[in-house]
Figure 1: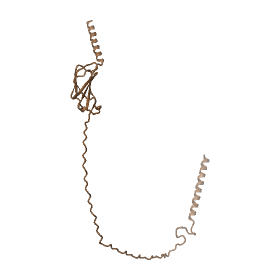
Figure 2 (figure 1 turned 45 degrees about the vertical axis):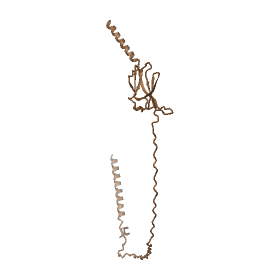
Figure 3 (figure 1 turned 135 degrees about the vertical axis):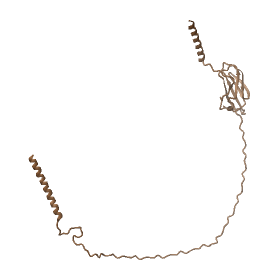
Length: 230
């Protein structure tokens, strides 16, 4: 029984711790809190005189009231508190050079606190140097008169020489007549046979026709005999 009661008590403690962790309570900032670059690039808000300044805002939880809140690492001109925001007006310096240099300290608890630069004015930081003008030096141009040399050699004209054209008379070669004593007779040129020769060609063609006719007749008789025998 006692063991059962102890187990219930331990379970209740674990549940209470889990419920407290789930409540989402803000983490606690630790003093000193260093500036880490919030507010860069700078939002410029200048007055009519372009007075240079920076405004740091130290914001803490609304349920806390820290004391002895002090800004270090830069010259502070003035400060004021509005609700849970303490505003520090300082001289102007390049915000990028103040990272991990400027910090704020306090006493007590502040919850999830932040240190930021809300705005500022760089002032008249640019110096204009008037440009120096060197007058140009002009050198007068020197003119050399042109020298004219008169021509002393007269022009020599050579008359053109005309060569008469030479005409060569045309030479006519008389046609050479054939003096060969050979005169081909009938049938000796190879073109046509002599008119009184033997008709060998006609005889050969006639024999060929007769032989073809005889062969054809013999073939027909053989075929008829074979058909009758069958």
